[in-house]
Length: 280
Length: 180
Image 1: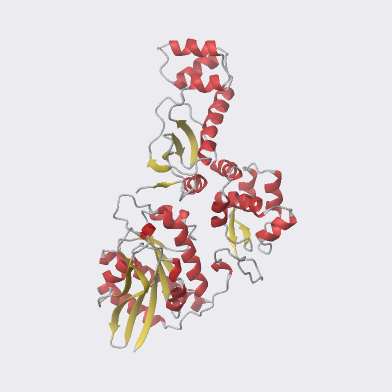
Image 2: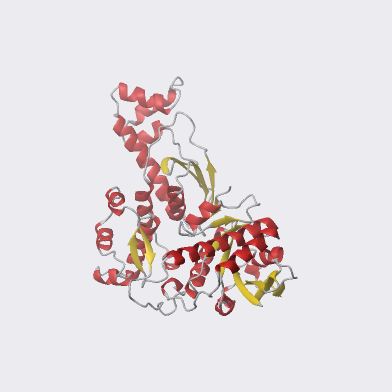
């Protein structure tokens, strides 16, 4: 089965949300119109590696860029042909006392996150997910929870239109999804995001939460979008309030009480329909 | 003669007309017009009012299938067509992520018309670029209790399966209500 499309239609945050929820293993390849190509690898829904075409992703370069090793040491390492792969190089550097294991993991993590955050700035780009394709053997990988990455990606969103499409109606309320305490503990939220979280309640509309916190429509939409994409909350009609969509906004049908009744049909009729369709 | 009705809805060019054509015992009464807008030129004709198909169950019972126009400018027809429906099918073209957001909006709109069961048919599953039904579920934010069924609208067995799943959902709801 394919997982293909364009970031114009399905954003990077939505993609990461899908990969996270479906606990996918494989590599996401995204090609931007300016010939840039990023590869993001995932294992059971966690981000483990990333690379960008045209950027050297070997450990020696990652450590040098992070300032963990000197230019001279990097040159010496590159000149040696007996070091098989990045894991072996990492061990050599740790044993020789140049870096610690923490230095290596932090540098790789920062390098990977840098690429993902770059992806959030691409307004378009063709993507495809290659199931079960992982980085080449010998690379140093990390394990990054996607919720935090999604939240950070949402913080960087600048497209008002996308936020408007995703959250057309601020008169909806929010509800926490399963086990919010455990999940919230592992996510690094900003002060503004915590302020929004503290008001989440089926009786409070998004608009009210924005008013309590003195936030603009754009600010509240961006925070709610992040919480939605990170799978922390879901949109629901507010309890006990009849809501009208704002002027000019697309209709928000979920908050309007159903206007028609279900037709009164006997069970035997449904069974007849089932039997007939089975024999067609 | 008792008439019961189901609605087949979904975004533009998702395969609604084909779905009804595949299962209807009569030639589908289609109200199609030539496509004039360049951005909609992925097919030659589109439904402007409705598609109508029929399945005779027995001498006293007939099932009508109504297909809705996919374009928002014909939205005024949706509510008319949904009046008295037993349930509805939302057809999504699994190969066109650019229509997923529209599918979600249509789904929400029909849910607001009547509290009836519905299923999502992930159409064009025979094509290489099709998204998996479970990926579609996440992309469209569909509740785990709602069935997302793989579908090929040109294949009769596949269409039968979608309709049967909808009928099973209707039956389950009736059983739940009887139990409470």
